[in-house]
Length: 471
Image 1 (tube, rainbow, N blue to C red):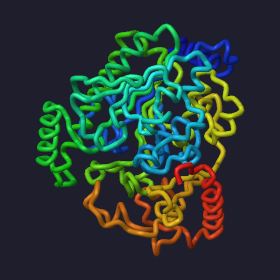
Image 2: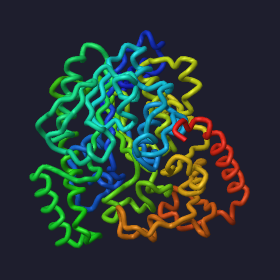
Image 3: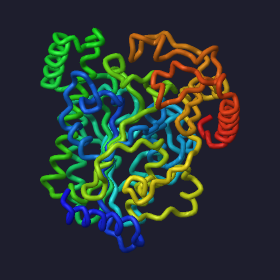
């Protein structure tokens, strides 16, 4: 970067971060949430043979949060991203119908952004309730397009020529589902370009059941054959190839969205936020960045997600290693937009804005507790699951407890490693950054820290009961 350009960039950051909200010119926001993509499922994240050029381009141009924490499963993460609070606060504990419904009293991100003059649109997988007032068009979005039955299995299996719901009206649409959603998102952004927009695009892929266009299936088979010939195919379970075909299809769709922003001359003033909703799934045995665990576990591999932020001239492409979480997204985007939180939102939001940390205006990021819980219980079974997939994070340490090992080979052929219980089913302490495989239990060497964090878990567990409206 030349010296004059550097000065201009610093001046822009200073004015954007510190001017009163009413004097800012807020950027557009495109939030992209990918379902079941793992942290290691991109070539730019170290995958030894999969080629994902479009997401690699986004990663290269973005600020990358390398220790970004989400919930172990889908709907809970989506609730936290939209409310700025742990998913339990909005009553979301599971992905099954009924338990995924986000409390109608929750203040949502689009509602907050609308107070700052944003138009709001949602296109794709909602999975926070699709009837009786839980629908996205009743939660702050001006325009929405979702699939019929949304988060149910029927919606996942209908990957081509889907029946979609446009603000409550059903329409049969031809085409590949996630690309149809992308085209609707592009239409929304083009139409509302004269005012700041918040466009929320969420894919169903690469979640099971897997289906991809034949060209992506062929590309995947070719890449896997080449990897096998080079000795790079760590897993021989080629039945998972359709998962990678969906990854390639998703990569292409994201490329189409990025190209649209460029052609529409929207890239320079659009914050692109890209995030995945839980840990790795069918790609875990091929490459998981050395992490233990996958989706629906409380090991680090179940709660670490990709988190990219691109805003040219404002955010310098770099790695940011602080422990940031899904609950921080709402307050961060609210600050970007110059949107103030009212008293109700302030009471709800437990995350904090990372914007000054991201722009370099501040390097402060104090220690705090973060909580994760697999929470896949059915109504009335909460206490039986108290120590099944529990985690408290403090700084670089994770206190983990899972009483029961799972032997089923779902997502992985090595459940004895990725789905094991903690030693003796008790609390185990791990230094997350030094021990991604979480094989070295430090509990005996740090009894005071274990006591401190386990007490924090008990406090949090008891406090969260008041919010669980579906129990």
